[in-house]
Image (cartoon, rainbow, N blue to C red; front, side, top):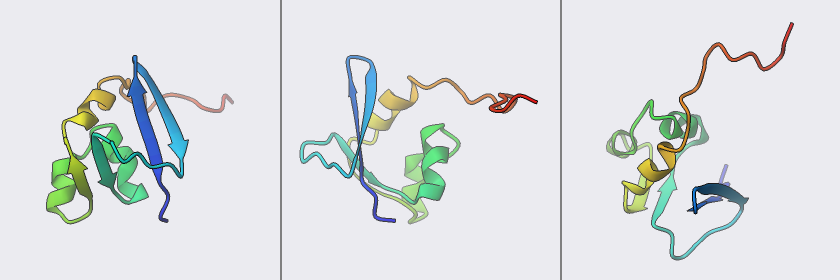
Length: 83
């Protein structure tokens, strides 16, 4: 969809800015929305998506790990709406 998001990790705080770009980004990734969540939670690797031609990246690929380690694993039994 051409959306751009700038994720910044600073002092343990992850922030997101829509339609922003940083020329000094450590890592820049282009990935379809359908693969983004899978990438962030670690169900697919960035390297695998690049090999498959699904994603592109410029910069330090290990930078994604510094964000991923801050996230808790998803709980499939988590009820968003209570009955």
